[in-house]
Length: 184
Image (cartoon, rainbow, N blue to C red; front, side, top):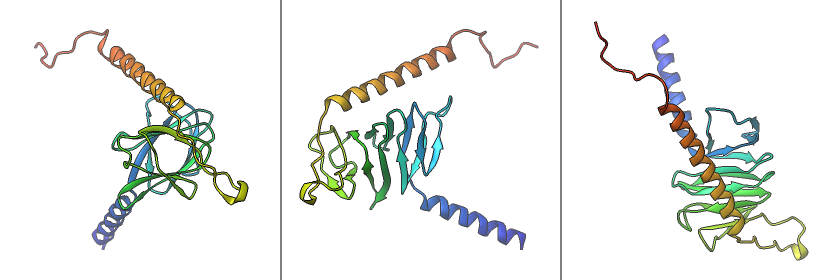
């Protein structure tokens, strides 16, 4: 009986884990909200997993959502998005604020502004969701700009490179050499 319950528990746990697919990771230098919980970035935790259906709300700094193919969405402070999978393809649905993107291909991620599909015209740019109550009920088009987003991505990549270099330097310098063989 105990073995049957244990096996059933393992099967249910595996099924739940399989049903919850990681879509992306999110990182930021300031606290942000993930799945309704406040996340405070700390030492040793570079990114947090984003599962299908998760809401991410950027805090006081840019939040960076990275997808498995290397595509990146940058969420400006206060921006909010739902991230999911649709037929195996990542979907980034911006519901508030402004986001930028750096895509590996124009079709790598389905991008949505609120409930409207957004079609990027280049691999990098930015957009914001249509505002409620726009004149005549028509939603204003998102603006595809590259300057601001490119600068943000360049700064983030440079900061990551500096941090990685500092970590490697600290890990490989100083201290006595260690040998696997010990004298007897």
